Image 1 (cartoon, rainbow, N blue to C red):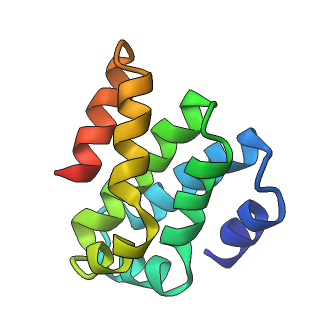
Image 2: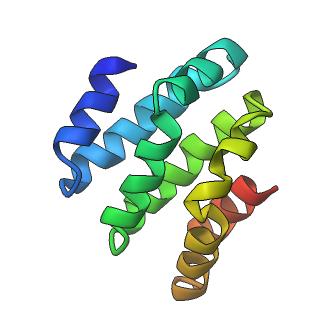
Image 3: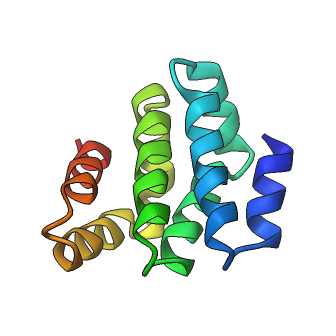
Amino acid sequence: FEIVLSSMTRHPTVASVQIQGCRALGNLCYGSRENSIFCRAQGGVSVILHAMKTCHVIEDVFIKACYALSVVLRNDPKAIDHLKGFEMVDIIVERMIMNNQNAAIQRLGCAVMW
């Protein structure tokens, strides 16, 4: 986790780093409550949300960030409390409105909020 989070933090405006970082975090946490809790504890959720904010015009960053968030939230019930201070719902709803014709953004935005 540390190398992925470090890469994403060092290169916040490089979309390809954010895309692959979110994909890696989602895959590392998929099906693993332990990894999801560890990801949150290491600051992974805030790094994912920062990617959404920093690269907000890049659809693929948003898609991969939603994937990673939905995996972490599914596996770590305490993550939602952690997210309250990050305006996650506002960020996701805004992107869903901006891209209302993009089915992937609609599906993954709903998945995070489910």
